[in-house]
Structures are given as C-alpha cells and as structure tokens.
Length: 209
Ligand SMILES: Nc1nc2c(c(=O)[nH]1)N[C@H]1C(S)=C(S)[C@@H](COP(=O)(O)O)O[C@H]1N2
Ligand SMILES: [Mo]
Image (cartoon, rainbow, N blue to C red; front, side, top):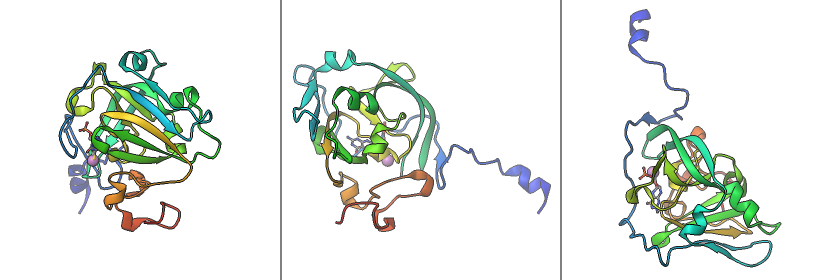
C-alpha cells in the first residue's frame, strides 16, 4: 500500500450518492411503450384535495404560459447510474402549489403519467425548490422518449419518482404508494441514505401495505 495505489483511485465525486456511478450521455429507461403526444386532447390536471375543491387543468399552450423556473440538478437512477449537472427548465412544484393551493390537510401528492404510471411524494418533496415539471433539458425541448411534453424531475430522490409523460397531480390527505412503490421500491427513495427497496422501510416511511 502507499501513495502510488492511492493515486490510482480517483476521488469519488461528492455529488454521487453511495452505490451510484457516473453516466455519460443520457440513457432512456422506462416501463412500457412511449406514448404518442396528442396535442388536441393533451392536458395537465391538478385534482384531488384542492383548497377550492375544484380541479384545474391547462392545455399545452396554457402549460407554456405558466411561470417558468430553471434548476441545475442531477438524476440518480436506482439501477445505479447517475447523470450529473443537467439544466432543467419548466414549471416548479412550488409554482403549481401557488397556482392551485392544496387543502390544509394535504400531506402527499401522486403524480400521474400516461398509461397509469404514478409516483407518490411527500408534500415537502413536491414543494422543494428543486422539484420541477420539466419541458426542456440543457435548453432543448425534451424528446418523446425522455418524457415530452412534460416530465417531473425530483433531484433529491431516485429518478423513478419523476414520471415522464406527466398528465396530472393528485393532492392527497394520506400517503398512497405509486407504481414502483407498490412493486417493492422504497416509499421515500432518498438516494443519500440508499432507500432503494421497500424492505428497508422503517415505521413512518410509508403507508401500511
Ligand atoms: N412514465 C414513466 N416515467 C418514468 C419511468 C417509467 O417507467 N414510466 N421510469 C423512471 C425511471 S426508473 C427513471 S431512471 C427515469 C429515466 O428517465 P430517462 O429515460 O429520461 O433517463 O424515468 C422515470 N420516469
Ligand atoms: Mo430508474
């Protein structure tokens, strides 16, 4: 052992959570087919426990008229690749909460995508300034396979918490598991504490199954 061996091991990038490796390029990863975009019927809805008890929806032009935010952020897939330092732009979760206030008892949201894919988030994760409904990455519109016209990015959680092809947000008064959370993945999904699988959950991390 000695200096030479240390020199051969590059220091780990502090932006990489434990058990993750750096990915160059942008892999495409999802379950099921890529949905077609149908501009005439496409909408983005907020429903469930809104403060007004009404639902809200925007068509594609309406979405692009909403206040926009840019976020510099990483994407960590539970299959262990991480893509660092993308610039995402779109509409933040906080903006959605401002535009459509939730009822006071709302504690969680479900974000719904085409074909019934879903991911549940604690309200605090949804309201986090890094959480963004992205339409663009690095200045380019998303491609279909990366979620055009709208995908969620939740950089502080594993990337399955960020549905591609988002269609709706449901405000919830209690937690409920989304697509992968029902299939053995961790309800909270913090990559910094490697919350990968539901068997790692501790009391309070998720609803009873
Ligand atoms: N609708 C939908 N969104 C999804 C998924 C999916 O299967 N369906 N997979 C998630 C997972 S596991 C990851 S890692 C990221 C991958 O995003 P990318 O294909 O743009 O790299 O999308 C997430 N969003
Ligand atoms: Mo993933």
